Amino acid sequence: MENTDKTKKRADKKKFRLTRQLVKLALNDGWTQKSIAEACRTQQSIVSAWARGEKQGTEVQLTPLLEIYGNKLRRKSFQVYYSFDKDGYKFYKVEGKIIFSCTMVEIN
Image (cartoon, rainbow, N blue to C red):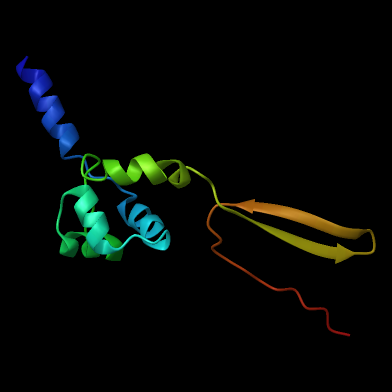
């Protein structure tokens, strides 16, 4: 019985690595830092640190936001790019973070 208590306490303290993104989703959806703090039972200053990426909340603290926005965190973002050549348009779907971007310009 003692081991399950220790396991539960560790789970309560596990940091959620996507805290900043989760808070940003809520803020962009019209929540205020104060309303997030009330939902997560913490202080507004803590939510401010989460939004800046200085601190991470625990999964237990962030449960109210995870229930609403958790599915959006799991989505992969993508961009669609195109090029044009003699055969017509070609479209490219790029998933994940864009780390390099270049615009091709034809010089005559």
